[in-house]
Length: 157
Image (cartoon, rainbow, N blue to C red):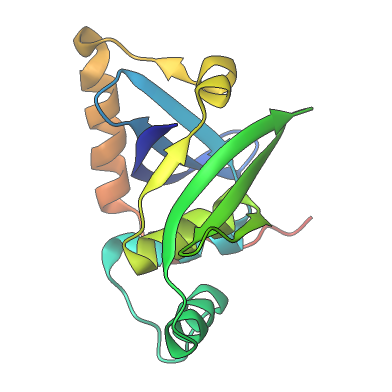
């Protein structure tokens, strides 16, 4: 398992589909995962340190885990099958619970929990961006600084 950092979320055009971009710590691979607008908002809120007036689902889950004394020790993105990513929440004591990566990432950001990606997932879906192309990633980060969670509203489909 390789540790990953969350670079941020954005809307992919022309599909108008949000993605979360993860970066391999100590490596040159990036992992884009397409997610829903609700999860994009939840991740953006957590990254920006925004606390809504009433808890969102991921905030509630964090509060429940803390109330019952459960520690989330890791989030693992474990598999990619037929274009669908799979993740696990790993709790102290070894209990593992299957989760969508978007929900797991939103929860990990709220709890300060490390995120890991399996070597197989990074081999299959990771995109290597050498240092000389890092300016493109910097442009993406600048874009993320200008976007707000409200930009991830649902479309009229």
